[in-house]
Image 1 (cartoon, rainbow, N blue to C red):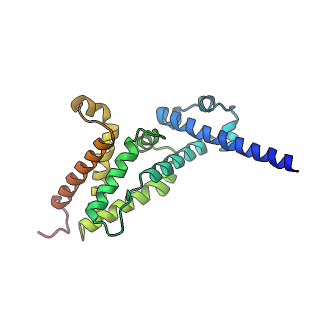
Image 2: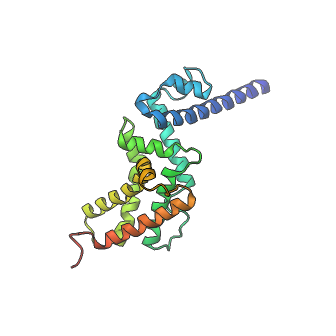
Image 3: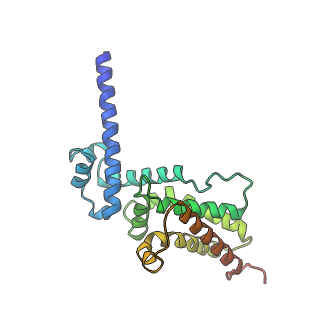
Length: 222
């Protein structure tokens, strides 16, 4: 009985390791090629698993992709939560800086898994069948948090004003990911180390606060 239990335990451990290798290999392949062009055989070869492993552990390529996105999101959020350790008594301005700083860190981080930014960027530019699930579980909570911060900064703002302001702030952050080649060409001194990302976060925050203070808002008092 003990031998059987040990054997089962060893099998479960091996299955867990194989599943993790598949997730990591798939993250790299999906980030590099996108969901549509990623090849199951290539993922399995990179993970050192047989071609039936994806069906066994995930069911199909689509479910593997969803699992990779979930792992990527959860890992990035644990490392860089949108509060970045702020206390409950922080000001809306501090909350906005933390949100922007954390977002930039998540999409520009070169650490593991470095493919988080690529996955998010690809999914936003070329939505897949997993987009609705991603939006519901990952994007919507972040959007609501940012909109809540902006509502404190611009009391009485309309929904349209808040929504457009959210889009403008996120757009600034994502440009530093999508526009890397252009930025490097016209602004070669721009780096992406921790200090550089913090400086970008400070700039985006200041720029956004100034815009919020002057933007045309139907509910803003003249």
